[in-house]
Image 1 (cartoon, rainbow, N blue to C red):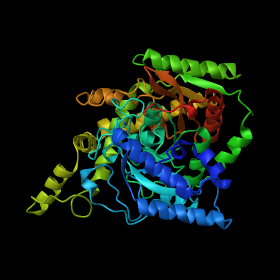
Image 2 (image 1 turned 180 degrees about the vertical axis):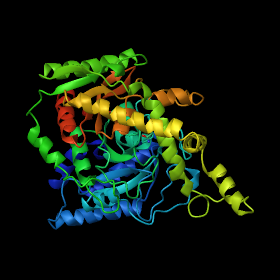
Image 3 (image 1 turned 60 degrees about the vertical axis):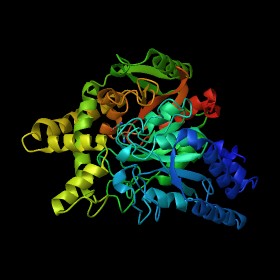
Image 4 (image 1 turned 135 degrees about the horizontal axis):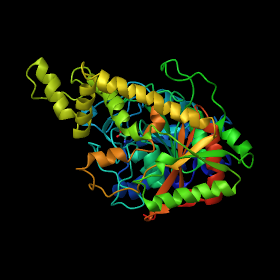
Amino acid sequence: MDTSLSQKPAGELAALLAGKKISARELMQSCIDSVAAVDDKVGAFLGFDEKDAFRQADESDARRAAGNARGLLDGIPVGLKDNISIKDQPLTCASKMLKSYVSPYDATVTARLRDAGAIVWAWLNMDEFAMGSSTENSARKKTRNPWDTSRIPGGSSGGSAAAVAAGMTPLALGSDTGGSIRQPASHCGVVGIKPTYGRVSRYGVAAYASSLDQVGTISHTVEDAALLLGAISGADRHDGTALANPVPDYFGELKKSAGAKSAWKIGVPKEFLADGLDPEVRRQIDAALDFYKAAGCEIKTVSLPGTAYAVAVYYIISTAEASSNMARFDGIRYGHRSEKATDAVDIYALSRAEGFGDEVKRRIILGTYVLTSGYYDAYYLRAQKIRTLIRDDFMRAFGEVDFILSPVSPTTPFKLGEREKDVLSVYLGDIYTIPVNLAGLPAISVPCGLAHDMPVGFQLIGKPLDELTLLAAANVFEKTHEFAGRRPLM
Ligand code: GLN
């Protein structure tokens, strides 16, 4: 068994494939061997189709042999969070509700990966319907942090982050509604990007909160993130929210810009460095700021006064939207149907009672409540107004700075089971990531060091559609910090 290939960043693998030093089949075999070697300890994978994976690998090798390789991603395996559709493969959203559902079509991001020659090969664990921060809300299995298997990997894209961190797949996609790419990336020591709202199509991605959901990337390096983001971004006639703005060649531009401008103006929100931030995490964030200062950047304190309301606003808007999006799972058109049901009303009630887990039910109830006439104005409408103020806060700050630097999560990952009874403290852990989704901005989580022996990432938050500056700034840091070479000691 050779599990060394699957550990490598996609950029290195692309060079090995291009130089015909390795084949896509060998690389695929290495990933599958890695899953066999470590996933019983990590639990990141819900499944993969070995035959189909090798079929795709062989097609890639054949293209390359004929001189028709499609680009750097050709032959590179990419795992998908289990809320992204892959034609003729299961899609469960880690819910009992969809335990026997098979996707009739590819999501747009899936189709774009195929167009780039990537191997779409695995479905990765998550919190049920992406509702959670620890992947413990999966109805399928528990995922563990590869750095310390007694701890959570973060969530809701915990399977994607753990799979990349443990070297089982070089690349993965996740989705981020309130932090679900950035927080697990930070907790697992990998790079995660949540693009600008609308940068990436959500067609074929199971909706949680449609005004916040965005698909993004998880990888070992910033260059890999640029490569993957470039492949999945852009307008889509199937998704009216997907923006028509041209997609920069993120990877090419990043290569070109390496060593160019690094004298950015960086904002640090004073509301983010307040109570609740673990001093050990804070130390890592301060070290990152010191690095940028030494590199010639100007650090400015900025104010985001709406931060205090962000978590409350998020849990009104996201649950309202979730209650509507979850309505389709009725046991008739979609989803688990109760065997105990004897009439139509029972089909709805029993199927939903049996099919959804506690967290999903909690959110459906909360979301239905805030949309009820009489409460709508007091909660939902008000939350929408504060959401606008939160976006205004950011835009005001961007009048003075190029991007914002902050923590991703106030703490390092907790132990499995530790916060099961304390839902509120888990909700509050998203304080630094949620405002970004409410404002629709791009952000990247960059590994920067360890605290309590666990990985910590910092977050760079950018202007709308300015992913490129975030990638460039993250790249400058990564090139001198070598975190990408660090792997969990499993
Ligand atoms: N942790 C947040 C929640 O539970 C964010 C989830 C997400 O981004 N999908 O809603």
